[in-house]
Image 1 (cartoon, rainbow, N blue to C red):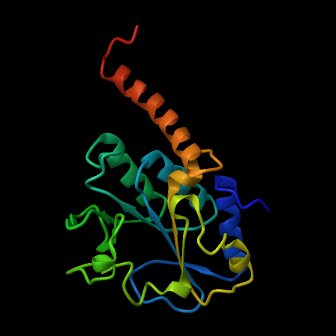
Image 2: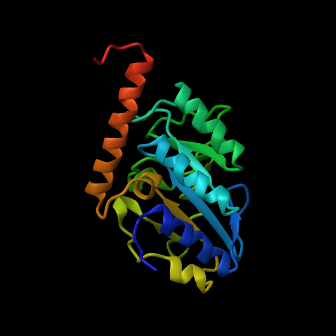
Length: 213
């Protein structure tokens, strides 16, 4: 098994979790033994999010997707944003808020669950009125948390530990653009994402009756 960042290996991670006896869980109740909380912070690409979400649905998994209202990369109020939310919900996933400090823009689009974008330590684990902060107890504990930030597993790819049920429970944070776009490094993955974005924007221009001749 190759521990690369690809949709194929993400599917293998899901298989490992099932083999290890884990069940999918969210942030609606305190984690218990055997829970695997799949969390996705959508920093850059709705298309990347949907690609990973489709893989999960194919494998019978569900997860919580954290979407931004103040992103410079995508617009939830656009037709693409509305489609992404609707599609995530239709696949059985949950949609929560990826907030930019100090703004919490919870509305009817989101479950009352918040993950801060690029948080600083002084507020990362502070309680949020009317919402769950995913980085506060009981949902966060260093021994029960893994993240792929910047295309790097700080403690190594967790698929082997998942397969043998080594975690009592786990919050697993992944960023979909890392998995949905090809690249052996973060730079390469981002270049792939930008190439795909350029093609998509050209199509938007055509649909907006821009003459590209």
